[in-house]
Length: 431
Image (tube, rainbow, N blue to C red; front, side):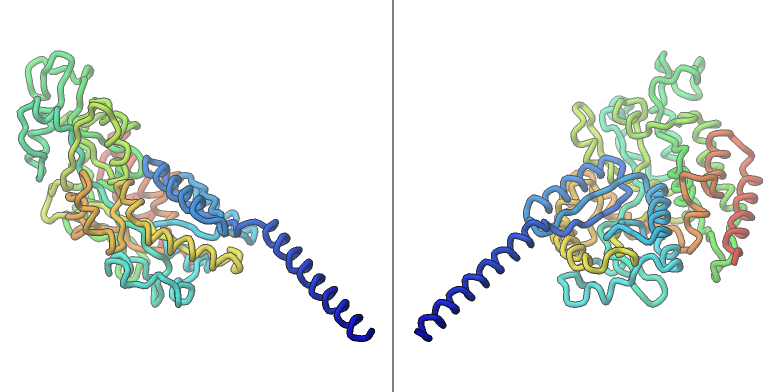
């Protein structure tokens, strides 16, 4: 009788355990996947590529759900700071190398070395310059995704129609080619008798009026060997003569040579529609241009206008916000491991992934080779913990005001440069 009772009790205990385990499993299943908040500033054609990559990751597994939030970079960082003031943050925040220092000083992003220890992400997966560009002080604060820079797009059909055999490589060629590609309604070019500057049907090249205007200035200023900050990072070290020369060249394209429009806003749209025959922009436009019916385009390196080759450059990377839920950090890392392993998907955007495993295959894609060549001389803005106060595009920062005054208002350049430099020194010297 005792053995029978014991047996019944054992069976009941096992059944209870099985029910408990099943209930636990159902409860775990009911909790659903770990939800990761991922923020980035992609708003061009590359935005849809990033969205499709995240959707593919979510579809391939059920343990992690990545929510992608995108808006322009400067407002994105403003939102990040607002959330941080309330004690919360996304799990992954994309940014650029030059923006890291300001968030490091505030303690809002974490060094990555300890986080990636034991993971599939190691420095040797990336080109060395792409890894080291994310160093602030003694630590690496971001995992690199890509490098990018300004290059030259040109309309092959427009070039052939004008009898132009190759894109410009220097300033003299750009001005002459620019004259041939700028056409009024009567078929005249700048300098021709009767040229109607008020009735131009095709300009040679775009001219930015947003933050990409001072990106272009940065390229030319570096071609002259210019420096922006002092060695200690406490003051503006701008060479006023060189800075003025660089801006003058850009301003003259609009107001003297007449080969670029004044007040342009839809740069890529004008190139797609044939209203401009050349476009200075980044590789992110390729995923759009390749799908535009009838647009026969190619790319070239950014022209060397002055002493040495240089073009504005930057990169995208992934950071771990300090105020994010540490319990989700492992899931965030799993997603980034997958992202790096699938860097070839990001290459579709036109960007140049930094993972060495896909680097060779990228050069075979249309339009990429000139951008890859420019990796050797891309110039990134210097790191500073006052980056947003100096460079942000959604506020009257010194760089933004200087660019718009010079390119939109045709302001006298030297006083604008001197004012911007004085304001930069004031910002850098604040405690």
